[in-house]
Length: 204
Image (cartoon, rainbow, N blue to C red; front, side, top):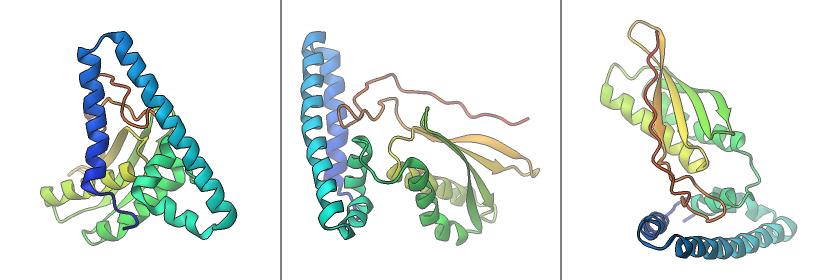
């Protein structure tokens, strides 16, 4: 179904990351380097094929491009290979628009403050309230976070400003992705960097 990614497809990506981590920990460094190079070549082959598909669609069936980019799995592959027709700003803005009806239903809204493509960070401000219900507030934050990460998998840090009880905005970390950076060269989170830790920033 368009826009849906099955559990199996998500599990495949996670399995690749786990296997690479295991191989790096156990194999000779030269063997690991060769394995990564092989994965890069395979990804390059499929990336080239995907580029041809997009060229053919744009040339002969432009009406299909929107359906392709609306598919979560295909969109993530397009992003990984630098082929998505929409830049990160457009994709994030569209993701926020998609969750606004849900937020409005809980008396809230979200404002995009900044996007730092260099470090893969997004800064937001949550507006309104959810009648003082902590569990609902968490649900709203998770909904916004999931929408952004689905639309822009290259984003690694999402910071949000929430109004405190005294009416002063306090920036906190909404969420961070694991330190296994999404690597376009391998098509998955294969950078195998140590997991990043981001501490909440307490406002004065």
